Length: 279
Image (cartoon, rainbow, N blue to C red; front, side, top):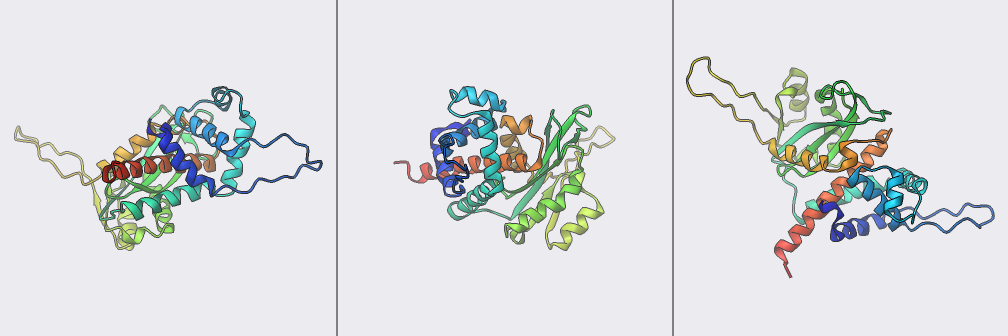
């Protein structure tokens, strides 16, 4: 996976390093054990995101350099400091500055996945025999570059998640640039149409393939430009911890999504650099 390539890891670490909060030294006697390096914890968090393994397994994979308890504590410390949110915002802004985001034909779609341990923001999955699951809703530009996302339970209807997804996009100051929004036919209802029309955005809901009752050729209705976001959802689903999530809170899942998006965009920016400056 590209997320484990040294060049990608180094690029993301360079971005995240400047966002880390200063370490606290609150031990009354000042005699606690030396603090584990942030880079080591970052690598542990990355291994878990990519493989989906348990924290104790990450500890073993790192040769005992850091405990599973420290990894969880450092992750929570960074989430509270807004590190992962800042990393994702910086990644999106960097891509827009260097390559350029295209909002001519945007798309929104959800993706459902397993959450066997349950917890906040999970529910019975309609596509997995009612087992516990979660889902994300993603806003992407014409080329499928993710710019905003939210997380909720697997049984949450995509239409209900559309408004918060658009709000998350608007908070980045990018929704105003959207010209056409492509959605699948599950979104095609009056509530969604009023919502999108109220934002001054043209709506294109894909239709099913219609087959004539006679033996004549099948009539095909254009499906719009939804394939880029389908591809992006597939990329994100390659991350083991997103595909089968064992965390029990929404902030943890959103942090994982933010880190995964930053890794994807870092790989794209490296490819762009190599394309125009191969030396």
